Length: 91
Image (cartoon, rainbow, N blue to C red; front, side, top):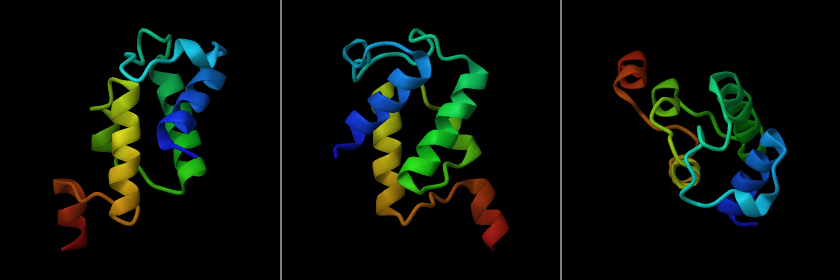
């Protein structure tokens, strides 16, 4: 299944809105996702895709398509994106 479709499904379930209302370029705040819902969404994404999203990356997510791009990037890198923080910890 396509990453974007799965992400849209997770958002639709979380916001209780029809899947058709969740567009690729939708701003997640305009979809009614507040800061607590973001944490729930991230937990669902991490569980669904078996990845770990770095905290620094969570803050940069604004749109649905950015979530999908981040998931694809994480999957390609084996589930970890090195940030300055993780690079220091791993050194």
